[in-house]
Image (cartoon, rainbow, N blue to C red; front, side):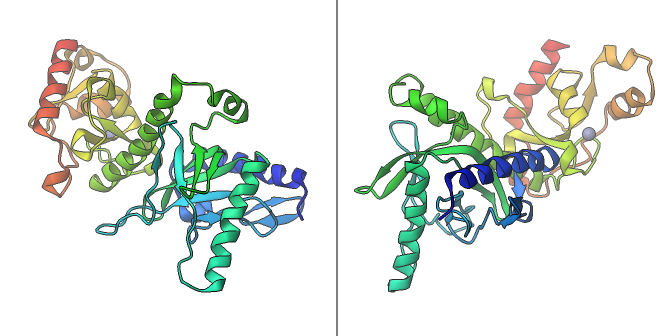
Amino acid sequence: MATQGFEERVRTTYFDALRRRQALHGEVLPVEVAREPVVVDGQIVKPFSHASGIHKPEQLDAALGITTTPPKVRTPPPYDDRFGDDGMFRYHYRTPHKATARARATAAADNEAVRVAYRRRLPLVYWFGVVPNLYRPFYPVYVFGDDPTAQEFSLDLTELGARHLDDLAADEVSRQYRAQIVQARMHQARFREAALRAYRSCCAICSLRRRELVEAAHIVGDADGGAPVVTNGLVLCKLHHAAFDRHILGIRPDLHVVVRHDILAEIDGPMLLHGLQGFHDQKLRIIPTRRTDRPGPDELERRWERFRSAG
Ligand SMILES: [Zn+2]
């Protein structure tokens, strides 16, 4: 049986590794990056498996990861995962995939591994499947409850840590807020990947194609009621995203770039000349092939009005 110290060291090491991997690859990780093992006390620990909903490395007693597979077109998700009235994420117990004693034993062992994490307050990673082969990890995640009647575990996905957990039960006000922030993060991850696909990971303005340097921008912002859907999105490189958000440039509803007049008059180095002024009155270089992925006319119009009133 693994000691408690080892269980905790694996977690600290793996969470640090995940932070470094996200700094390099972004918030959403490809399966092969998530799967890279960590070495703790000379032992190779395999931290992730997308084959199974609950993952416990062989050296551990407690589950280290819980995974929701990404939705496939026309295939409903395997479990009815959702948020409870307490704002906690509900994760259905693993059920045997076949009616054999072996399958039942495997499912029971997986569920028990989550209970060990619950009893010993060991944090784990919740892997949210964004699109096939891409996962957004939430960590540290604590198991907050175990409901054998509903056959569900409750997970706190706010990533706020164990100290926060002590206040949760009494914390009426933040219940709804808790579910909202987690759902917003999930929607944001799906929005980004949908936009990257539609724009082939290229900046719509300059066509730069580097996943690390491009972002999914909202046309109508969150705060103004803009939805995290691809028709309210654009992929922009970091420079053009910042310029778009600060109204240094705008996008006319006919999909042409307009650079603000005072910026056009400035004299500076090559970045201003080529990176900003050079795109004035140019059509977007990247527009999604599928008509249904293209920016919505209403969204463009609303944003264009904001740009004109800001300039
Ligand atoms: Zn760009």
